[in-house]
View 1 (cartoon, rainbow, N blue to C red):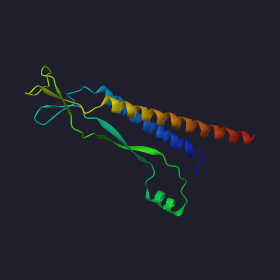
View 2 (cartoon, rainbow, N blue to C red):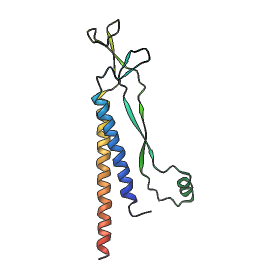
View 3 (cartoon, rainbow, N blue to C red):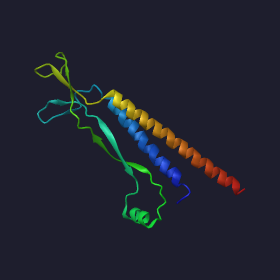
View 4 (spheres, helix red, strand yellow):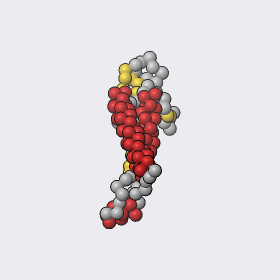
Amino acid sequence: MSIFGGINTSASALTAQRLRMDVVSSNLANANTTRATKAEDGTAIPYRRKMVALAPTEQSFSSYLNRAKGASTGTQGVKATRIKEDETPFKLVYNPGHPDANADGYVEMPNVDPLKEMVDLMSATRSYEANVTAMNATKGMLMKALEIGK
């Protein structure tokens, strides 16, 4: 294990949590966007909620082999593998005066739930704070180790 293994792990988690916060911000900003994309027939498609998929950074053959041999350091960072769209159906809201209303007066609204987004934002924020604390603890241990050498 390298001396900076813990810091590198926390740094990857900070990057991943920041991306989660960016995606939540984008979802909240587009909570009322009814014309995000156009279909092939020219009709407007509302904004679809996005989510971040995370995975451990080391998924190579050598990492699995080292883990099986017991030589693994156990420190793995995290990386965002992709940003996927939520496939839940759009909400139908009766608003006959809206420019995107269909013949019955219903408008397809984005599948963004602000309450769910706030929960995701709080989760990402708490995880970010925990990783900052872990990084500061690791930095403090390294500084104390340097003082021993004086």
